[in-house]
Length: 139
Length: 140
Image (cartoon, rainbow over all chains, first blue to last red; front, top):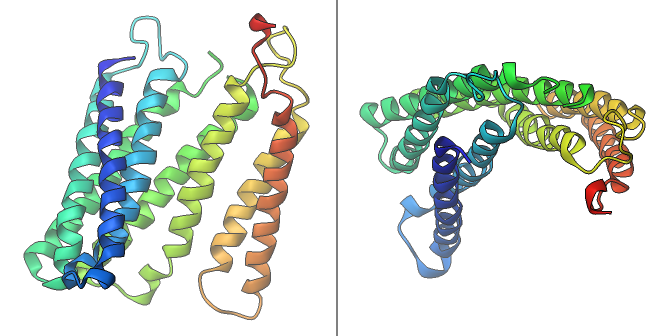
């Protein structure tokens, strides 16, 4: 398993736990009378699970298991894969902070963080597709 | 990697980009505000990422790596059911996603048609793969 895959999978494991904790906190809001910011964690929990856990696990395993790019560089140029890892996690963590914050106390600065998060995650997707497309081949 | 897997995985990568683009627009709209046009992307965002990307990628990879039915390299069973899966799943994603966008007289039927195509795709895939859920040929 290449080192980059190990990082993808470690982050994915972390998000699995965080997603379920966040979902639990959102579910506990009403019975325990938790502050309104907790209600805004619903979409965050879904995206921690779907993007942080499922998608990031797929990214890491695909980078490891897909057919080799070439004999010299079996997984191709590592730069797009590193960029994907950094951007998907930066974007997702920005969302975790900014989305509930914007829901409770909207401001221009927090709105800018949400836009930054959107751009970072979109670029992560683009870098991953750029990296993997040539490896979708016979062998 | 067999040809049907390559088509399914490439389509899945395309849906990943479509879904991430829609998701980025929706998230940015939470910050900057956006018209109803942006929010109408939500059903497509979900359909593209859950069915188009995640389910289709899983199917493409399973068709590639599950134990084969015989020793010859190219024998993964008939390719017809998996091609049917590919066609029906992708048609279903678009019909179900577009059908959920806004209420019109015809789009309930469109969404239902999309879902039925997805069910047919899933059934064909399960039937094609069922016999490949077994020990590898080397272990027999």
